[in-house]
Each structure stands twice: as C-alpha cells, then as structure tokens.
Image (tube, each protein chain N blue to C red):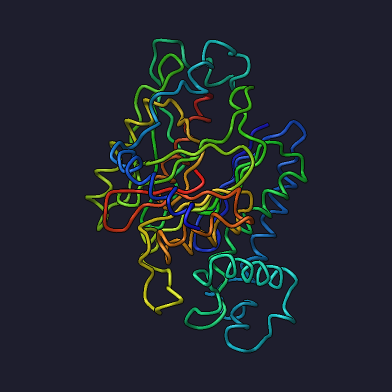
Length: 145
Length: 249
C-alpha cells in the first residue's frame, strides 16, 4: 500500500508536464491515408479515385452527426489523394458557441496534420469531438481515402 | 473488411470499429443491437419499468432478477470490496444503481459478440468506455489501438495516449454530464479527481475503478497494489491543479 502511494507520488511531477503539452500525439505519425493514394488505385472506390486527377481539389461532406449539444458535420477537401482542408459545415451553436469556436479550428488543424486521425478512439467525454471524428470518417470513406 | 457502426442508445452514442476476414457484420450488429436494447430494458434508471427501476422501487429483488442483472450485481459487489466502498452502487440516492459498472460491462459483451461473428480487430466505444480486442489493422500492420484520453478542461483535446492491444479503458469525469458521481462516504458530489482513467483487462471493472477514483482521489492508488489489480493501471487528473498522477503505468 505504501509502495503504491510512493509510485503514485513519484509520477506526479513528470505528468504535470505532460498535461501542459496538449494535444501530444496527433501530428507526428504518418497515417494510413498518406500511403494509400498512389499505391493502390484499384482498391479505392472507383468513382472517387477517377474523379480526382492529382491537381483537382474535390470536396466531400461527411454525415451530419447529432450530438447532445448540436449537430456536427465535417467537409474535407481532397487534392492529390490528401486532405488539404477540413471545415465544420455544422457545429454546435448557442450557449456552446465560444467553446465550439475554440474547438473547431483546433480539430481542423489536427485533421490536416494527421490525415485521418492516427488515434482510433477517445476515452473520456468528447461529444463534439466524437461527432467530428465520426463525420470525418464518413467524409474520408466517401473520398475513398 | 473494416466496418464502422454507430448505435444511439442509453442517452449517448455507441461506436463500433470491427474488422476480420470472415467478419459477418450484418449478423454481429443485429445481435449487438438487440443486446443494447436488452441492457436498456434491464439497467436503465430512466425507464420506470426497467428491471433496475423495479429493484430500486422495491418491486423486485435482485435475487429474482434476470441473470445479467445478478451477474452485474455480483461484479459490483466485488468492485465495492476492492475499492473499500468507494464504488458502492447500493449507497446511491434512490437505491441500487449499477450504472457505474454497466457501460464497461456491456462494452465487453459487445466485443465478445463481434468476435463470435468473426471480428479479429475490435473497438467498442460506449461513450468513453472502450473494449479493445486483437489490436488495430493499420494497412496490413497489426498495432495496438491508440486511444486518446480527453482533457477534462477542453474535451476537444487529447492529453494522454495509451496503447492497448487487448483490454479496456474507462474514463470517468464530472465534465461529460455535469457532476453526477456520488460519494458514498459523505453523501456529497465526488471530489477526488477531475477525471480518472483506468486501463485493464475487464472493461466493467475499469469503469467501476474509474468511478471510485473520482471519489477517493489519490487514496485510491493503494487499490492498484492489490493482487487482483496488478494488471490494472490508472491515469488521473487532479481536481484543482493542472497535474495528473498515475499508478502501475
């Protein structure tokens, strides 16, 4: 019992630092999608694959996901097999407005950096975030990435 | 083939990400959907005629309830022992309320069902309580599932990432649905932590331990020295400081 408490105590200092650097891990991993585009055009759904000659930018809108605090819907722009932009078409408004405005641009950055989020799930409470991932996933699948 | 699926239930979202060469997704998600409905009928504290509501109002004994309710009640009693009473579904206003165990327990059951139908790589996410099986197939390379723990002060951010091949993670916090965890010792709202995540083999026990850490805070670190909990670890954000602690990490 004493040992466990000591272990816990010992990690407090180190983990304080971890909390300060958020979010840690979303941008530094090469993704599933980045390897895919040229590698296997045959595996991608034919419509979107042929609809994207490398120069043209095409937009795909994900499903609207209803969350407790509103609807989240993501639109991605794909160029040359890569996500070059991600926007919230719909995001919760009203009393959560200030919060959403802070959240959406950050998620947008993460999406472009990570090219189809390199974490596969989130533990905790992230209603808007969850909606973003869900809508993003459907936009990515529509884009055939 | 990888199949992602969502079910709206229990006032929240359930998310499934399953893959397997012989995975029969139609049969799996049909069975999971009926299981999810059953769980609601058995355990909902919002439905006046659910089995748990009947137990709470004294219309039924646990001993004569559905086998799943008896199973969860027994598991809750074990979790109460392990946590020295910090997790106690019997000391909640309104009577027996196993909600702190059920979501994790059900996540494991859903993962079992997916595996029975051929899924080799499974993520079940019951609103933050996750059951994970067989790692994640990243374009042909099998890796552990990377699971982010969201920042309690800004749920759009990930503050910590854990990698789990086979196992579970549950996070409890006062931020998702407002303060909802009750301290069985004082009768007040739990104040031991801002959010608590527990990683281990059994999703139901992870759920209960995360709830209990919200009550006990750092005092709960000692539970993880118990022989029953050597394969469990915790990652906890403190209430009033911008710090976190972990045990068995």
